[in-house]
Amino acid sequence: MPIATLHRWQSNGQRQLAAFLTHGAKTDLPPLMWTLAQTGALTGEADGLEYTPEGQRAAVTQWAAHVGAIVTSRTTSDGREELYAGWKIGKGMEEVGGCFRATIFLDDEAPQPGNR
Image (cartoon, rainbow, N blue to C red; front, side, top):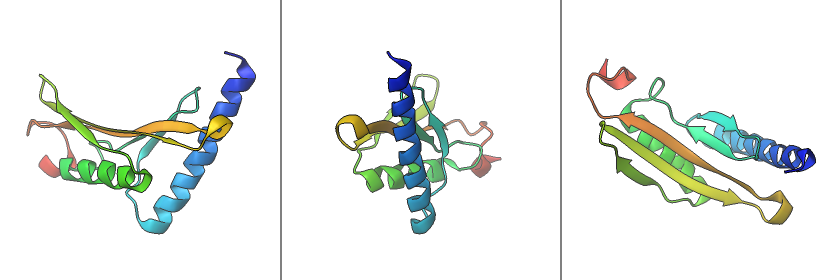
């Protein structure tokens, strides 16, 4: 992949992140932990250190609704609930993709704000 392409993708992702942050602040969407990949993909994560399990679910659901994404959930064999909502915004050279996600530890012993 040409380096110029990766830089363009990251710039697109950066612009989309700025739009998300602005819209989130204006509409009181829950803050997320954001990651911008070298491919320009954005990941917004509702982490278990800042949110209760219910708060994590609400954060992912609210952000997914903002972009029209569907939230899927699966429970792993080690007792985690994984929430995921993939999305794409824009077209052609301006397209940005990413996801909103959360890992929820269903065990009451897990160090989350709601069960300390």
